Length: 108
Image (cartoon, rainbow, N blue to C red):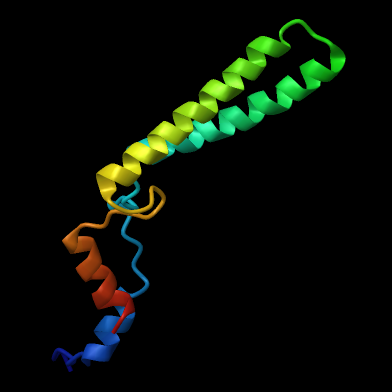
């Protein structure tokens, strides 16, 4: 009638595995984002440099130097993250709480 139904632990676990936690970060170091954006900017400048060089445009040297600077910034940023995090710059840094939640929800 109005009684409570006992819930089996597997039903509870099944319900929690599909919950998306929006309040957590992915653990990537913020400097990785800077390095990634510098890499993209370096690629874009390198492409513009090739086009400017092929057409004989006067700005080809400036764009080429900008590409080199962006690539240098990216390499320095990636190295700083690697030294700081003691692992690859694109690998996430998860907290103990995030690690436990992952293990509880997905490695049952």
